[in-house]
Length: 360
Image (tube, rainbow, N blue to C red):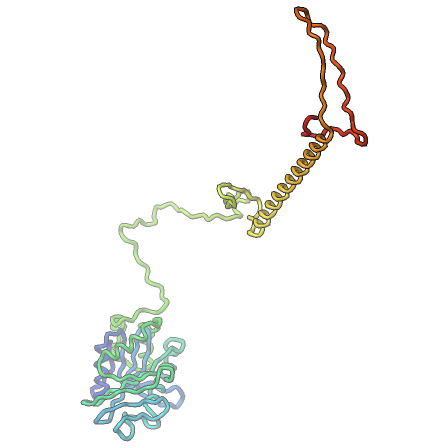
């Protein structure tokens, strides 16, 4: 990360954080000791220890060193005074009129957020970070509120080594790219920072790109690629239904509802309910045909059986004829006897023959 606008008389804690930012493997620009104009008329503004721009974030950093010579647990409530075990009074330096360092960090955050509208045309999201640096030779443990209890965009971290800042900045890399070379340069003008180390070329080396949404420069065609000169104009004509009213599109084959049989339909394909109704109707017709055959067969069997019983009651009759045979002579004319009538018992009426009646 590039650090500009450094002061030689900066406190030891700020110099330490400046070195951590310089060795932090995060693309960006850190402005040390930047004065932020006030948001209201007559407001003198305030100074931020560091203002950091990365392609994805803008952060106001306040550095606070512990005052206790023995160290301990630093408790950092959001709305109350900070305290440390074994130490009386404020464990870190607090600006006059503030309850704790979070107030100072939030006021710088809101002032910088209002300044982003002049540089980008709209207010951008700005974060605030309080970095606590332990006194030499002491050990400090941080007791801070949960993220849900902290104000939006505000955080506290205990700085022991450069990797802590690197881990914290990595959390903002998922955001979309906001800060480009042009926007960062505009913010430096708003802040009144004219350090030549923060020029456009240096920002490009740090990972900042051009303006968001700018069209890329046109690329020249390679030498092996033929140009359009001398090539015939070939245009692609899309099919339009109104181009040829008489043209008919081929009808796609409809799926068959019976395996192995292709069925052509002029209308829409039958729905599932229609197919079920047709199958039920066919099954009902088949059952009716079977029932009709059963009724006709049963009636025929009944008629044949009744006729057979009646014939047994009448008895049997025979017809005889006598033909005289003369040996060694031509056969004479045969006279056939008339068939005798079968006597019908009294009280019974003769009946005709029925189909399939035996001996009829």
